[in-house]
Amino acid sequence: MKSNTKSLVYEISFAVLALIAIISAFADILDKIPAQYFNTYLIIDNIILAIFAIDYVYRFIKAEDKKQFVRSNIPDLVSIIPFNSLFRAFRFVRLLRVLKLLRLFAFSGRFYSKARRFLNTNGFINILYFTMASILTGSVLIYIVERGKTVDTFADAIWWSFVTTTTVGYGDISPETGTGRIIAAVLMIIGIGFVGMLTATIATFFLSKINIKDETDTSKILDLSDLSDNDFETLKKFSEFLKRNV
Image (cartoon, rainbow, N blue to C red; front, top):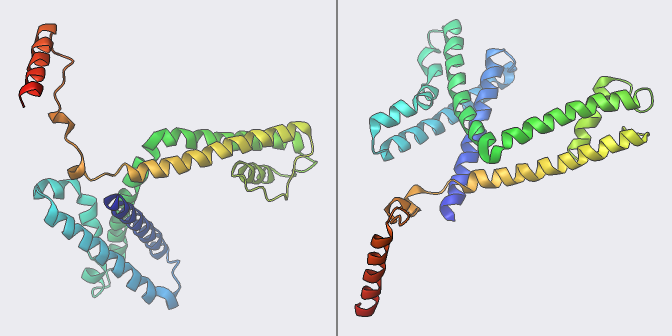
């Protein structure tokens, strides 16, 4: 149980760090970081870089097959290359931006791989598609039914459909017609199912990360399904003999 908790904390922490790295890299590339906060950005960026570097070195040391580890974790290796330290003195601004894009893609690859595994858990990706389609369909229907009454624009319809599906229901838009209320009821049911499925998927995703060393090696269990009747009878008699004499 403790190993599962540690794995949970590890996965969440590095997923959050990867997301922060992606957002900050985008902001830097697009010159959206105010000058007064740029030093703070550099400090945070270097801290994240150091954390990922330590994590990579630690996993490399623990890996039994070093070559296979390096081949399987190339994006992680690229993401810990300190581009800032190498090129800041030369002020190769354009080259620095290109290299930061590579680093951005490396962090994105790590985050994407985790997100893809999560979305495939319990077939959650299909539930997500269905819910998004339901929100869009609900927006179209409520716009047709309630236009001129409670909904003036299609943006209002999308907003209402989203908050209804998420069961937030701010109350700023409330359907007046019977058909509109039926649409709202259907979206609320879908939203409740989505939240329940999301919760179950999160639990399954993290609890399924069990330490392989603690698992029972089922490959060593004898499979009796392929035995003939005679072999099975012989094995049964041998088992009874052991019970009597052991």
